[in-house]
Figure 1 (cartoon, one colour):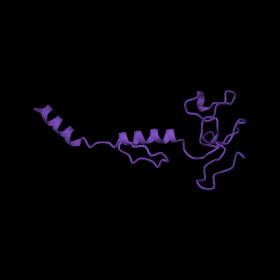
Figure 2 (tube, helix red, strand yellow; figure 1 turned 90 degrees about the vertical axis):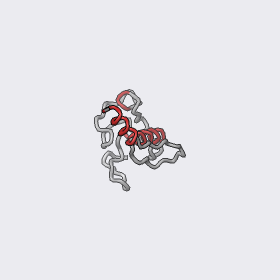
Figure 3 (cartoon, helix red, strand yellow; figure 1 turned 180 degrees about the vertical axis):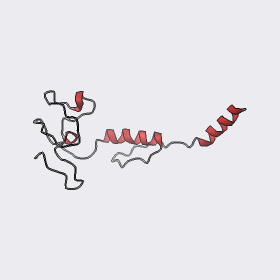
Figure 4 (cartoon, one colour; figure 1 turned 90 degrees about the horizontal axis):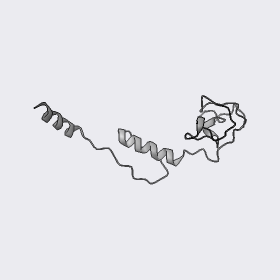
Length: 106
């Protein structure tokens, strides 16, 4: 895969850290390859000699589940996911908040 290759579907750089099998947000500098040099822009093409394409371009299901939980917490619509997880939906607390503030002002 050449550095300048782009995805025919979305037009993003193909040879980017986010598409590498060593990419891991929990690892030091987001890379599990200890000898790789630091790359600032993980979604842009780069010259890393340790790049190996991931087996799948599908989003990591654990990241998708975590994103769905955050979206549910803050009221955004959940992302598409392959898992059938039941994400709790946020409750509308505006009425309870209004009652609390009225009681507090008295």
